Length: 469
Image 1: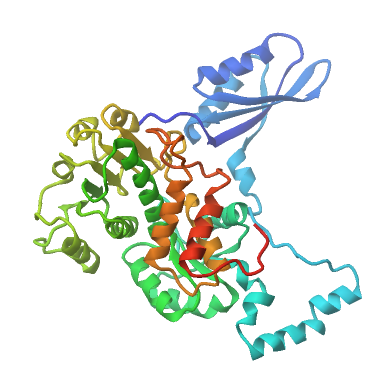
Image 2: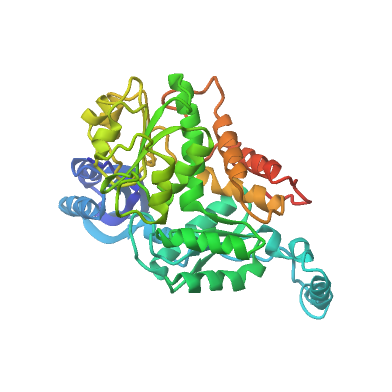
């Protein structure tokens, strides 16, 4: 796929040009000739002989950014002083911080916030541990836990490299749900060590968000922690994705006037996300599903089935189809991809049932070109922000945890996930619903509150005095 300039590769070039002449007018032309997009041009210092100018522009990637700089430097009279990558600048020193909610202006305030006054609060919690939810950050704090083994689409890059992603996740928790989240990046990929570590730090948190832990270990980590802990454990790569896919599919099927019970669904991807999406689709009423991995369709006759694939084989593909993905897509009403880039073509989409729905969610390059898919499909969704119908987990996890924390829930149930998906779908009104709008924007003001209310109600709880949001 041809990429376009993106703010993700935004640079600011500080340069000097002669005060007279045509160099200034050539700057924008040089960037555009190199394929970039100028987003700002600021004169930061002016003199009789020289002008200092900051040129901010978007590029496609790092090589393209360098080509833009070379194009600017080639202008007669231009002197490059500094090139700043705006994404790296945003991450300098980290993206989150801890702030005190109470003033510490004098000895009296210090004595209440810390010793000796704090001892009374500690003894109250010692007598009744449940008071920790009322008197500490526990009631509004989530641990974002990773082992760095499956970070975004980057693979097993380790805990240090995962930290910027987990910081970003914590920032999203705060921005969209008023939740204080903290990155916990573990230098181990041993299931027993991960489970034990999370177990011993759990008293300080109201919920655990597992993130970017590779399959199949993530299944065991989540299962064991849910058995051990009395707070919710939620693997966002699985359940956040599943909630968003079900919500989007609910609305997409409304657009094409089909029912989930009647459609044939073909899925690509049987890992963490695929497994969770499948389970939620089945819980929502899907009956005719074929799941494919890199070896083809998952069916009972395969001799390579682990526990996860065996469950899939037992609950899908009732006719025992044993071919490849392209064959499974033929005649399907819905394609859901959570797998790998470029595995289907427009011709494959053309072979689907009339008015097909295509969710190509591999990111940044989808399973099929969205432009090609849109030539044949009635509805197309991706995980990208530069196409309509972006399916993004931030639509789900802030509201889910807001509801769980407000209800003081001890766990996460399938009913909560279904309720969250239903609430997310309902944010799109009948008047707004259409092929290019089946899922709301991540900045829609009603998303987190609607999802939180649905989860809270499903959990049988209500907000207990919490007013921050």
